[in-house]
Figure 1: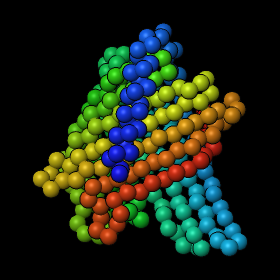
Figure 2: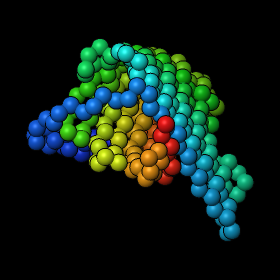
Figure 3: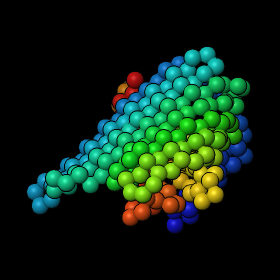
Length: 247
C-alpha cells in the first residue's frame, strides 16, 4: 500500500510535467534570492471529555553565496494525551551544494533523527552525491538526487545499525499561482550490507500565502522502514496544518 501510494503520487507528478513540457518551454524564471527562510508552528489542543495536545514546529533557511547553496532544516513534533506523551520526534538536515552548472550540483549532507516512539535513539547519516534539474517547464520544477554515504543508528531495543548506504530521491514543485504552491519531496535510502534494509521519507505540502510574510501550510509526511526496531510499526505519518512565517 505504501509503495502504491508513492508510485501514484510520483506518476501523477510526471504526468503534469510531461503535459507542461508538451505545451512548450516558458522563459526562465528570475533567479532565487540570496537568502530565504521560514518558521512553522502548529498547535492542536482538546479538553473536556478528552484532553490532548499536539505541537509541531520547524524552521528552514537557505543561503546562496556565489556558486553555492547552503540549506538547514530542523523539525520537532510532540503529542500528549491525558497527560501521557505518545509521540515525540526531532529531525534535522544540513546540506551544502556546489553549483556546477545551471542544472547540475554536487552536494554533501548530514541528516539526524531521534524518535523514541519508533525505537530510534538516534540516526545519523552522512552522504555525498549529485543533484540534477530534470525539468523546469512553466510552473513545474523537478530535481533528481543520488548519492552514497554511511548510516549509524542506535536503537532502544536490540543492536544498532552501522552500514554504507545508497540514496535516491526527487524534489518536485508546482507553482499553482503567485501566492500558492504544491511541493512533493521523496527520499529513499538502501543499506548496502548483505542483510540491509531500506527506508522511505515522503513529504507532500500545499502552501498558500495569506499576507506578505504569512502563509498557511497543510502537509502530510510518511516515514517507512522495511525492517523496523523489533516491536515497532514500519510506518509513521504526520499530518499537520501550520502557520508559516517567511523571512
